[in-house]
Amino acid sequence: MPERIDFLNDPQINFFGAFYPVGYAVIAFRDLSDAEKVKVLWGEAGHPAGDATMVLARELARAEGGTPQDDDANVGAVAEAIQGETKIMDLHQALAREGATFLMVYVPDDETNAQLAAILTAFTPLSAIKYDQLTTRSV
Image (cartoon, rainbow, N blue to C red):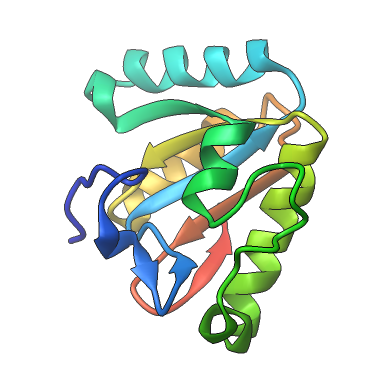
């Protein structure tokens, strides 16, 4: 089971330069209020407060190696070689430029992922990606 990490500041979230927070789902919302509602519902479902953290576009863009304005100029050459992860980073950067709000949710196992998926059925996230040990998948 992956451990909780400080996903915005801990270097272990980087896989050869690509943002890769194992055990977390990164969910993008057009509206801040939807991210806030999902965070509240996650807590009401019995999960610790720190297991769902809202991240503004600029913060996620910085963690992934850039800012919403720089069009991924800081993504390293090694990260670009890891196509799947960089495509996700590209998606996140594009959503960040559009002003999306991101919710990082700790989902260490399939059961927890299913709980999150059930909550998300009442919303329309722009993107919902779960980072597993060596793969990513939709929530």
